[in-house]
Image (tube, rainbow, N blue to C red; front, side, top):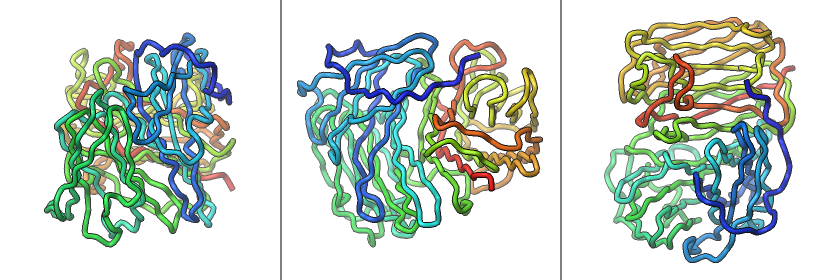
Length: 448
């Protein structure tokens, strides 16, 4: 078992060195969005080494509109000890938009978020898109940014296009009504190689227009997103690419408890690849917490079953405070043909080998979207995990005994893992390409 991760506040701005040999590359858009009061929000970044040995990484910032291939900006080189995290500070000049390019070894993960707080005391920690290999959109493909309409109650502040190819890109952007019909003609946008362009006027789209989604395609590998703002709650949100002109979500929206801390990564955030099936997100918190309630929600699309063992344990979520015993908040899994199970277990504050768990049979359908809602309330030590279908239909309801009187969260936050590594001990198996992990949300309610 691994030790808990250590939060380190070391800076990434170290001595400049020759670029690191690329083993894995991720891209993080830095757009410094505006808060509801007009002040500029800082994009916070963390890089974590979840491997068991020290690993190097390199990072460089490309200003918006600059050519990332032609740029002579050299990477800053640093390293991370096993199971350590660096808080990346000063990666970009204050207020400047652009693209952070991180070269790192497998097992290292980058997280980014912005933080706001409402007048009702709710703190929002909104995940910024982190573009891994599995999330890149292939050249010539079409993606959709859904949920841009005026009926959402959100202000559409920024539209951004990212060219991830090694050559200049030509992109087409067209806005669509809710019925899928085009709203005016498509607009053509040119982007230099490996670059980000943002449009604060959202390419002329007005907030009161009929547009419900944006259809985007490019002749190079690309990524597109929109940044929105809820002026009533102060929450900044990111609309990320989808493969159809309709929102893919299984869970209905519910009111959040006043004074809660909410972390959210909207849209598709993990798509397994053969080389990198596992996704990891660090869930940031504003400081150490003592919780009386925690709610975890997520959507997922079932893909092909692992050929090594089709009925194996396919990991949907492993949320923990570190990987020692007594730190697992929720471990949610599905098992395929011959077993067809939906399972949950946890071991907060329990000794070695102690768990509480529940399971139910369910006939999974390939390419179907499902969701779940996990809720633990410490006052009565109740845990409820609900499996949902499209539109919020309740498919299964699991009841589990809780074991913690208080859910303690350190200032370094929580860790969420999605899928398993290749070659883990059976029955744990990795989820093959074709599965999708979407709309991850954690609501943390301080104990009164």
